[in-house]
Amino acid sequence: MNDFNKLAVYFGYFSSYFPIVFFYNLLKNKKIKTGKDTFAPADAYTFMQSLPRELTGWITIYYWMHFIWMSMIAVGGVMLAIAKVSGLDPTA
Image (cartoon, rainbow, N blue to C red; front, top):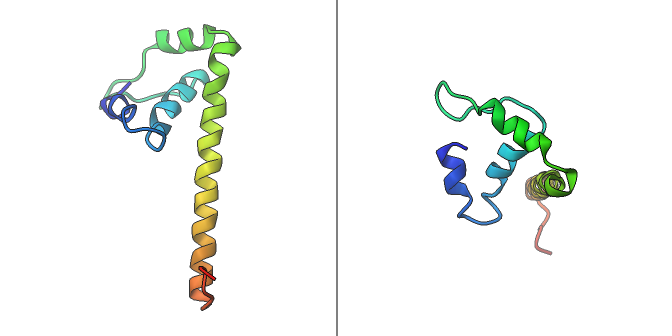
């Protein structure tokens, strides 16, 4: 993992998205940049994909939980912006 992901694990739910994306990309065999010119080693991909589904299934669920949560926040923000522009009181 890169240094940012190593630091992000200490900041709770909101920053746990970044390490989860790292492990999700390992599971999905997507190229991960860990430095300026370095990428995650092939052994990491092989190891993550060799683990049974019972041990790695939570990573996919947690990834999609974050995606849904961020989508709901974005939709709520857009709805509040529309209400503010149209002159409606969003707190009523």
